[in-house]
Image (spheres, rainbow, N blue to C red):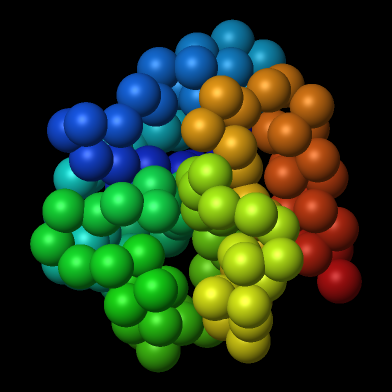
Length: 123
């Protein structure tokens, strides 16, 4: 079972993402809306993956990703974001982000993310 921390905002619609994860994958999904709370949780909880929304309530997604890498550089992260792939790459380069998910995420995006996660964990 893959343990996932889902960091979202009150205004984001993560229902499609949660539905796909719960319907097609064996996951233990924990949710929070606070970047600070998420950073505390990753220290003790043993997550396999963090999925964060680009629009976090108490910090920017770039600040969260930077702090995440400092606390646990081996923890995989994906970000739900509507910016272009080029802009995403420029913004998050060097932070080891596993992938970008679209706002209207599809099962194939999650399949690709889990394939990368599996490959990363085996390497």
